[in-house]
Image (cartoon, helix red, strand yellow):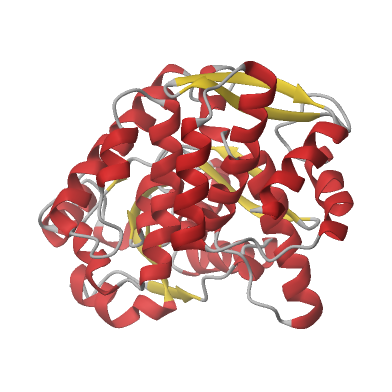
Amino acid sequence: MMCENIHSALQTLAAKYAEDQVCVVIDEKLADSGESIIRHPEWPILRLAASEQNKSLHTVQQIWDFLFAQGITRRGLLICIGGGVITDLGGFAAATYKRGIDYVNVPTTLLAMIDASTGGKTGINYGGLKNSIGCFAPPVGTLIWTGWLQTLPAKEMLSGFGEMLKTGLIVEGLWSELMRYDLDTMPLESLQTLIAKCVAAKEQIVAADPKEEGLRKVLNFGHTFGHALEEKSMEAQARSGAEPLDHGYAVVYGMIAELYLSVTKVGCPKEPLQQLSQLMLHYYGKPNCKCSDREALIALMQQDKKNERTAQINCTLIQHIGSPLINQVITPEEANEALEYLFSL
């Protein structure tokens, strides 16, 4: 829920639990600001480094050890404060600790507010694949306070806006508003309204299909290509320490590839592809990939967890804005053509 007073909302929610049964995991970068908002000296706090590299089983074990050390029972509560890495990790640890305890998400980035903290998907990266191990386990609450965004770097804001753009393409009535939003000044008041609309749209979709058996797959638009690009950047980081690709940037690039296929395969009008391509070039820049990367990217897409058959590439495409089509199987040749378009911009 959107809240004006994060401290009060958190205290009200935690009041349902015994004092010694509440723990906190927090992004270590937010230790000062986050802990001042918590303002509760009795809650033990585990500070974690939030990075895709640390989104691992080892970090989940750290959280389990922390919960055991604090004597948390099945009636306990874990509060997860941070971006998507923290909410994914904390949620997965909570969902599997003693077969499941309650947890609350307090997203501190625009990306986490729009995407990771809502919907109950939890998980870790494994085997070089993003979010390949996880479970559906909805939090007992998600507290969205836009005050966190006031000091967020522009790049992180743009990353979160990428997921907002995705929402605007798969539901009716949002795209034109998003196109009018001023990304140069990023006014918080109008952004708050857009956040509320995006979150409400996602919650409605998730409520209708909590375990992604049908309708919820529309939320994967842009993610088949996007995750492959993200995973490729993680490989580069492991090899040479290169800066990894932000998730929201990857989704923007992925949406362009999947919009291209939407135009060529299912007759989507060209206008949204042209609009997003122009926006990408102006604000996000081109993906740091070479034509020679295409084969590796296609191989990663063939391993995507969304595929229903081995080596099959499954996408969500759109027939027009607000009309997504799930379970669209594409060939490696079509994937290559879409990547060629993306890299040619």
